[in-house]
Length: 451
Image 1 (cartoon, one colour):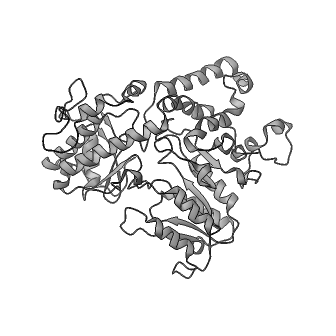
Image 2: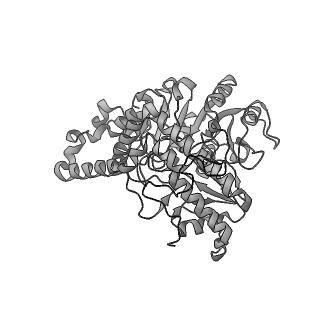
Image 3: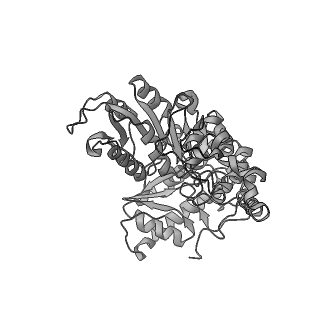
């Protein structure tokens, strides 16, 4: 790692802008923003990489001491109780997924019975699309989706005897960065996608936030438009849960999935979650498993599946407790901070980042590819440059941890519970130095993304 990273003083500021302005009428000073930050104290509850500026929380959140303590607690219960932990642990392991669903429900604007923690995100896409798709029409997606959603949906279309090339309708982007919601509505209205398909849309399945550009889509608007046309509305919330408030029940969302290792900071491989609106309780999941059986008779070992009454029916196998415990602890600081305050700071951090990028990086060919209106962006910012792949490598070499998404995006994510405004400034200063000195030229080009 290079030793020429931007230096910070003991208050966490790079020195510039400590009087509230940067001296050129640009962004408000980082030091002032950090002094006024009501969530500043939460940083102490996280284990931060030594000597690095971590700007990759939208890919993997950092561990909190709360999460580590929860994992250690379950390890201790395993040692002391062994199999008795299913009933005697605190909390009992037997209802761990439902209990975590109860805790997540307020972040999602949902009844507790409608939320459960289970499986992986991709598995949940499989089981929910497989459950709700009846083979009567198309599934509407967009070309900027995270690929796993398309993999799973295409597989479920094939399982239903439908050709994915005919029944998967894809909304195209106008600019390669964002999706215009009016185009989504138009696609639901069209009887044909122009490629010979005349199937009406049966399910809309969209992300809440586009993983590359960070655009935040209007879930309420899309859900209402879908329901007006007799279309079910499902969403992948992986890039919004834990950083953006949701109101799924009030919006009428039919179903949703998400992971817990990004803004929820539950750890690599942590269990995912899903939401099923109460209107759909009682359906038999397409991938039934014994852990989704009604709890009262689960150990009667009946050969026929009786689904649990709510979202718990979509659990498949026995939950891996060590992959769930991290979420139990990780929710402590999130609940203490409050999702509205988290969102407010996230908007502040991304606004600061965009302002600094305009001031320092634009002249070097960088373009902000994320919507500038706060209401239209999630928790990360896409900075575009023709050398994005090599720039991201150079940033990591300098101790600024970001990731690269082809063809030209450096994703920068100041996760709000542990990132300072001064960290954002330091990251941009490192970015600027790399461009000015053409440091990226020392690295090989790559055509693949950086984990």
